[in-house]
Image (cartoon, rainbow, N blue to C red; front, top):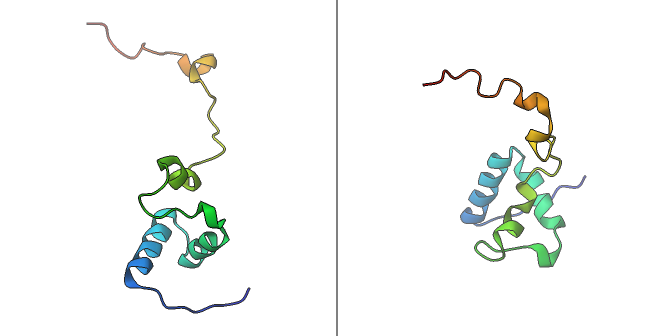
Amino acid sequence: MKTLTLKLPDSLFAELAAEAGARNLSKSEVVRERLLRKPGAVAKCGTGSLWSRIEDLLIRNDSLPADLSTNKLHLKGYGKSRSHR
């Protein structure tokens, strides 16, 4: 992998550092992700829908069933630990 050094405004550096910290990634990884995005997909802060701005932060493969009530083991003992008043 090649190395590129560049100078960034303080505000952009702070934005990259905050995103890297929040996502537990290196700043280099965040910059690479942003460079690989399609030009139309880059959204400035406050533009685009909320979904388009947070889509890359969401977990895609959810291990939980769609409805926990379909598995009777999840309901076993439900309400039994409470004493009736």
